[in-house]
Image 1 (cartoon, rainbow over the protein chains, first blue to last red):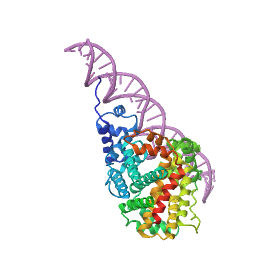
Image 2: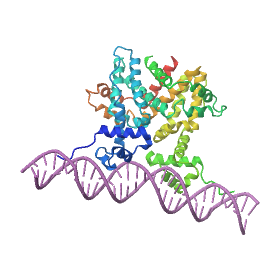
Image 3: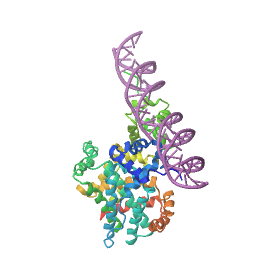
Image 4: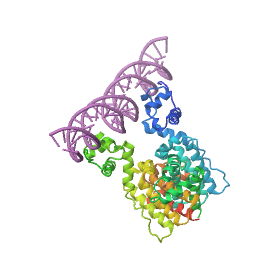
Amino acid sequence: MPRPRSLSHARLASAALAVIDRDGLAGLSMRSVAKELGMSTMALYRYVDDREELERLVVDLVLGTVDTEPPAPGAPWPERIEVLVRRLRDAVAAHPQIVPLTVAHRHRSLAGLRWSESVLGVLTEAGFDGDRRVVALRGLLGYVIGAIQLEHLGPLSGEGTVAISELPPDAFPHMTETARHARKVSADREFLGGLALLLRGLGA
Amino acid sequence: MPRPRSLSHARLASAALAVIDRDGLAGLSMRSVAKELGMSTMALYRYVDDREELERLVVDLVLGTVDTEPPAPGAPWPERIEVLVRRLRDAVAAHPQIVPLTVAHRHRSLAGLRWSESVLGVLTEAGFDGDRRVVALRGLLGYVIGAIQLEHLGPLSGEGTVAISELPPDAFPHMTETARHARKVSADREFLGGLALLLRGLGA
DNA sequence: GAGTGTAGGCGTATGCCGTACACCTAACAA
DNA sequence: TTGTTAGGTGTACGGCATACGCCTACACTC
């Protein structure tokens, strides 16, 4: 009966993501998204309860691009899980600024749940069940969440490593020496190397 | 010559932590901390450049309570690392609200660096060096950061698990079934189980 | 084509926030 | 006693999320 909606959740989320990509996460506000869409601030509240829901829409938009189709049905399960993890990591890497949002809203995102479902499927086919399957999923989830944050908020190639290499060597002998090696370790080697450790642990 | 300081960084950080423990992280503001100390808001800026530095002080205060003395020199290295990880986890668990702060400021906290130095010491004694040592430390760091967040922001025992168990079973068969098991998995089993996977991977 | 109910869109206002700036003054050195 | 310096404060600004009430475009009925 009444006036039709002029916006979709998807369009709202895209506008917010555009703001984030252009101005950073700090630039995201109800005002900035409204301006991006050419409407008033309060109009957004017809589509979203509060800012938190807007953030959740952004997370859903990004995680929604992850292909959660179980990969390579015949392949060994550690490889299949690695593929799923890489897909998730790549999707987030396309919009690194949203990392803090994914952490905060992961569990309320349907797309995130679909990813977990897919990982569980692979684990189940590999013979995991009961407690072991719960621990395996949560362990993977923990590593992936932490490692992605590490990668984007404090990368090995960044200033943090330089700062560490300049610490007093007598108080931090191992840190200063390791920091020199660290600069030569690529982000892929770091992320996938850690994941490989976890997967090896799962297989033992 | 001039008037002496009436505050120490430690006292400032304690006041902020008291606010957080009482009113939650959302209750932390320059105003609330000033009130806690019985001084004006702007007085805090004589001791701290901005809010971010105040947060860093809080992280340092909490992480500073972690005993980073290398544990049990004769014990197997996986056990020694587990002890260090447990100490860190316990310190954070005493003030769960600060989890987001530790993630944001970890790399600028001296206490955090001392912990990493200690872990590196154990890894070095265990024979790790070069790339492998870098990957081992970053892998552990990634897991610890992610798992601690998972534990406090989305615990297995919490509403998230209940919500998952109520998802449509046809779209999420594994998730709904696993959620039933998950309620019986303790936080310790989850956290230490995942850590054990990683340590086993390191040992292979 | 006219009338009407509904919900979309907007302007305003409130109460937070961090913090820049100018000022007053306590406390020490001389 | 006096002067210097830094500690402490009050005010003000711009930005934030969002509650509330108004106006009106629209799709429907008649």
